[in-house]
Amino acid sequence: MFTFAHLSDPHLELPPVRPLELLSKRATGYASWRWRRRHIHAGEALAASVRDLKAIAPRHVVVTGDLANISTRAEFAQARDWLHELGDPADVSLVPGNHDAYVRTGWGDTLGLWAPFMAGDGASMPTSREGFPYVRRRGPVAFVGLNTALARLPLFATGTLGASQIERFEAVMRGLADEDVCRVVLIHHPPQEGGATRHKWLTDSAAFRAAIGRVGADLILHGHNHRLQLGSIGSPVGPVPVVGVASTSAHPASKYGAGGYHLVSVRRDGAAWRFGVDVRRLREDLSGCDVGQTLNLLGPGA
Ligand SMILES: [Fe+2]
Image 1 (cartoon, rainbow, N blue to C red):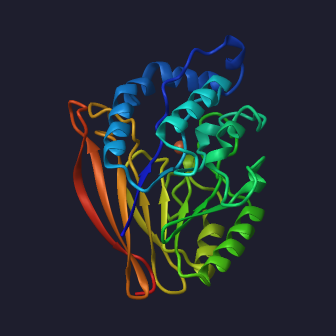
Image 2: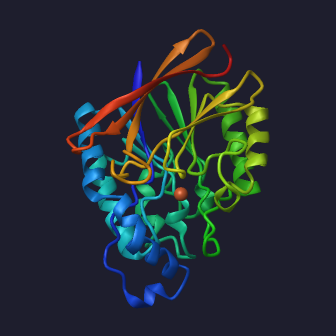
């Protein structure tokens, strides 16, 4: 049995912002952080989730985006340090979210700072969106990381994969299908039908679902909506389970309720893979997490 943790949308506390940085879409995001979001995504809640996770010491950790809030340089540097504290880049796999591409920025001093956590096995560090998807094999799992993060107009939190990334994804998945490996797809935006409202959906989710319909997958993990979400996408050998996780920094008193993370165990079950998902929710006093529920999911091919 192989166990890994899935966490998402930590939205680290916003470091001081320079006035010049607010002359953009960041102004609305900054206001939203000051008035609303900083009361939801509490530093002490995030620290409690990470303490709980580290005590369990899963074999691998996946993070499905939104470490930042308004994509300032200080946020990328802060999140890089947080990622290194979470684990070695070989043990932590990351995909970016819409808040990590809040405005148009260069790569080097933004997402480039997180590149060691998004580099495929034996591949060079990604230097742009062309570096996705990446593939990382850990135990029986091949983690396939996608990038949906693209700068958008104010009040839009949509994501897009793009035709070329979907094409590369399909080729990668087809190659992995010939191996005895569990293909776990990491994506920030929920890709299933009705996975998100129109102003925050994955704009080319239909094309992504069509690709899954051709090449399949064993499990798809996402974040973005800050709540536990269950769905499925059809594949040639049956429905692929899709699981969304709550924000790992959501304070128990916030409108989302207690955040936390998922502990996912993977094992063979005949021709399919079986997944046990412990939904670990923060306690009111932030002294750790408890298992709110356990999901028992069977991948396609059974
Ligand atoms: Fe998001």
